[in-house]
Every structure is written in C-alpha cells, then in structure tokens.
Image (cartoon, helix red, strand yellow):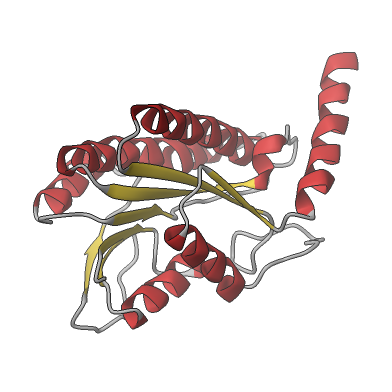
Length: 232
C-alpha cells in the first residue's frame, strides 16, 4: 500500500539510502534537511530546513498541515563530535540537533498521528545510549535522553491499545560521516542499516537494535566508565 512518508535528515547517510528505498517502493516521500536535495522524482518533495533553527517548529507544522495523512515518519537527523573543552558551544549544538529537534518533531508528528488515529514514528538513536563518554558526552547524553523518551512514549501508546506506534532504532557504527572513531567494530553499511529500518517498518517494535553483537561490547565499556565515575 502506498504510504506518505516524512524523512527528517535525509540528504546523506542512512537518510539518503532510505529515501531511495522508499521511492523505489512506490511511496510518496517528503524530505526535510538543512541541505538541498539532488533527487528528482515525481513522488518526492523537499524542504530545506535546519532542525536547530528557530523556525523549525513553524516550518514542520506548515509541512504537516499540508499532508492529508502521514503514515510514517523517520527522524534521522543527528550530529556528533569529539569533545573540545575550549568550545562547549559545539556541545550545545549537538543537543539542539539530536535532542530538541527530535523532541519537537515527536510532539508535532504524534499530535497529527493521534488525531488521524494511525501512523508509525521511527526515531534513530544509538547503542551509545548505554555509555557515559568522556570523548563525546553530548552525543551519548542526547541519545540516552531520546531512547528513554521514545520508549516511554511507546509504552504509553501501547497501554492505550491504539494504532499509533513508536520505534526506537539503535545502531552501532554505520559507514557514514558520523562514524569518526578510529576503530569501528562490526560496522554496518548504509544499505544494511536501511534494510533493518525497512524490517522495522514492516514489523514495528518499541526497541530495535543492530548489530546485536555490539550490545554486550558497548555495555561493558559503559559499565567500566560508570565504575570510574562512582569510584573516582
């Protein structure tokens, strides 16, 4: 069945891969990104908009108002950088994109989906939500907040037994510009990440994580850092 899909953060990385996939599947796709799009397709429209800008809320509201029914939304926007203690403004920017942009999107999209009594919202978090990270504290902290928020909302919607669903998708390393670590164990390709997202679209679940073998590894690193905090 043809769906109307909104992708936020879709001009590169997993978002670009998903845009191609969904268009190839015959869906109507709307992209929102701070960069312009090179896609020319009868089923695609694009809005150039930074999720961290002051007018993002009004821009997204206008976009949603123009859509008769939104079947699926994916929040894929995200940034991360190595900590520079001399430039904490950059850390604030990470929260503006990863967290507040996502929270505003969640608010407006869920409002629409609940009014129309249908829809699936997918947020892209990270297995880094298990970490306290001295290398990139803003990135992991923003992902911790998102994972807890999305999963809490998903449980609340499940308790209502309504048709609106939320999925929190947590990836490890994916071969995009976000993967900046010198060592990237079990790194997924963009195609593999998009394939997993398509599986979540077909079979919605509250938490979906890949690769599974990364979970105990990240958990161990997270435990070590927690012990350092406790016993420092």
